[in-house]
Image (tube, rainbow, N blue to C red; front, top):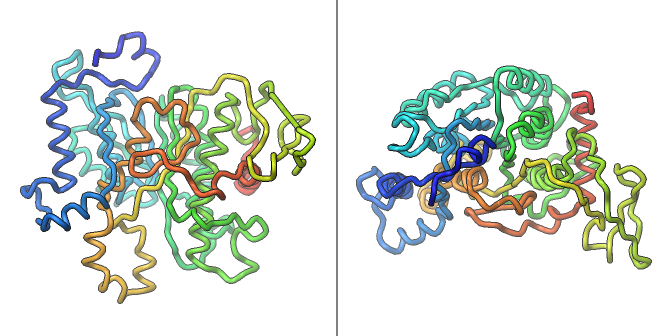
Length: 418
């Protein structure tokens, strides 16, 4: 494949240079070592049947040779698990050796947004050491605090020139009931509201760095989920950690979907939708379901099930939004489940080794959404195992997505002046 022209490089496009046979083979060896195809990498050797099962469970792998030199990637929760492995991958995507760049040219500048600075710096040092990329930095971010999110966004905007890829990766899973300093249920606040506010506050950087991407890590657990608008923090009903987790993961998908719709309109402020020209139809058999936040428009549903009959006809912003399910992974995310069921941890140790993904395997879909070319027309889509997948019906409800956006903007105090 020919190298990207200087003009394309100046436009800030994702580069897929001619990496050469040696570079491709080097990348493949790294992929093989992580997947355990070699018995020289410390992996446990399995019999052929179990090896095939393990390979199937490990899911897809991102084979894109995209290079991220001179790009900036921000990853939340990057000190452990799939966030750490994603950061490592972004950091090593430097230009191919033998080109116009020096052999030691780094991959992306990676900003690791972590709640615990000590653990974050330890992870960053490991990544710098393993990739040779000194442009891996740590900044403090507590998604359970809107004040912390605002401070982080302000600091990032002042210190960083670009934001090419934002990966909303951090999260908590099935933790005991708790409220954040802002008074919201922990899982909904950390998994959804914190990332909602962060993305909005950094939109200016994303738009100045186009083409850019926002990747939101959701979960298969969104299936069966429901947004409890009348009781988002479960203050009126009995708290169930799984129900709460499902709500937060469904919120991730709806957020990514609504974000994509608004970005396609090119509006500068996500808290308030753009004002493009609309093609609007209202057949007699459709039912009006309520006012919208679009000037002079109301939302309708055709047959009650086919979504909003409203289409923007203006150019997009150049920022794409994707959501994904990383798979079921052996990470610290499930520590609350293990604390609640210590016997379960012991009983499932061996099955977990065989049936759960490693953090590297779990990071592949995040990496795929971040660097793969040809996804320009897929903004708002949902991915799993490095492939486009159809989310549950509840994650395709545009009216719920619109309502969640407006409610979230009110809850986090996001206004057009931010």
